[in-house]
Amino acid sequence: MKLSKTSEYALRILSYMAKDPSQLYTAKQLIETLHISDKYLRQLMTGLTKSGLIYSIQGRDGGYSFAKKPTEIFLSDIVDSVEGMNRYTGCILGFEHCSDDNPCVMHKVWVEARKEFIQTFTTKTLDKLNLEGVNKF
Amino acid sequence: MKLSKTSEYALRILSYMAKDPSQLYTAKQLIETLHISDKYLRQLMTGLTKSGLIYSIQGRDGGYSFAKKPTEIFLSDIVDSVEGMNRYTGCILGFEHCSDDNPCVMHKVWVEARKEFIQTFTTKTLDKLNLEGVNKF
DNA sequence: TTAATATACTATTATAAGGTAGCATTTAAC
DNA sequence: GTTAAATGCTACCTTATAATAGTATATTAA
Ligand code: SF4
Ligand code: SF4
Figure 1 (cartoon, rainbow over the protein chains, first blue to last red):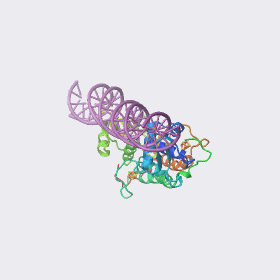
Figure 2 (tube, rainbow over the protein chains, first blue to last red):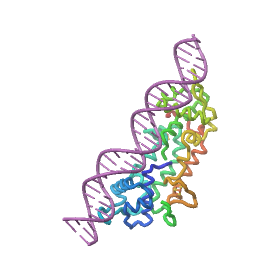
Figure 3 (tube, helix red, strand yellow):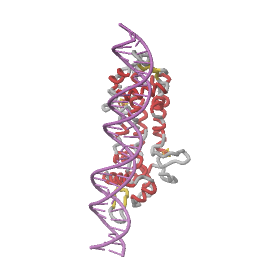
Figure 4 (cartoon, rainbow over the protein chains, first blue to last red):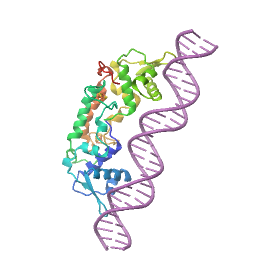
């Protein structure tokens, strides 16, 4: 139930941007606000750009802004675009080949807990987050 | 929603042992059955022994067996004994200081999903796993 | 008492994730 | 054009996790 730093960063960045989705954000601004290391954030932003969630404008007065509306971006899209959601939705015991037909001892117990997790990430879009009145990113 | 290898191993080992809880298992036997690397498994077993979930008998004809009954071992006890459950129950965005009073934008959404996860690990004991008819460890 | 077969301990190595550095490229203002 | 300010790329470094190696210790059977 822990995400990688990479996914943490991506969620923090995009949820911050979602507060004012039409704005153009520079890397510098994001770094100072979110305290994420410079080059690592830029790598992530390039990735998010390539996957089509945001677009980037190079050159002077450049920056990043949403390519899709926050209402169209599911939390799972964000994780998918930086590392792949299947890293978290797969088997809790690390087995490769799993199914309801050939389960391990934990399957039943695990599937129940996982359901809620997957549900949350695949049905909640960025705008559904508690963006109003919160300033913690 | 992914556990470390360390926790994966601990769960696999103990759930395997729980099929026949009175038996004494040698490290060799566990390694061959579960395909976990030799020395790493032994380190884990030593840790599980020190935390009181199992006991070890040294010397010839030695091995490991349960110190507590599977009915008394919660899944969270297992994770706790090898690395600490708080690694998974903390903040999904990685913040240190969090509360319902000072939440981030994801808190509400996150807490719902986390609830089920914590519930599962803190209320299910080893014997509640699907031990019958399953041979995948 | 000796040999065989276990676990315990500690130091080292390997791998993957996260973070850094430097330079290239793009664009707008002047 | 030149310069300033932004993103893009690639190679390298650091840290934490996982895996391994070697040796010490414990116990039992012959
Ligand atoms: S059966 Fe389910 S819980 Fe067990 S290893 Fe497969 S996916 Fe994981
Ligand atoms: S408010 Fe909740 S979700 Fe947000 S950082 Fe804190 S614990 Fe995590």
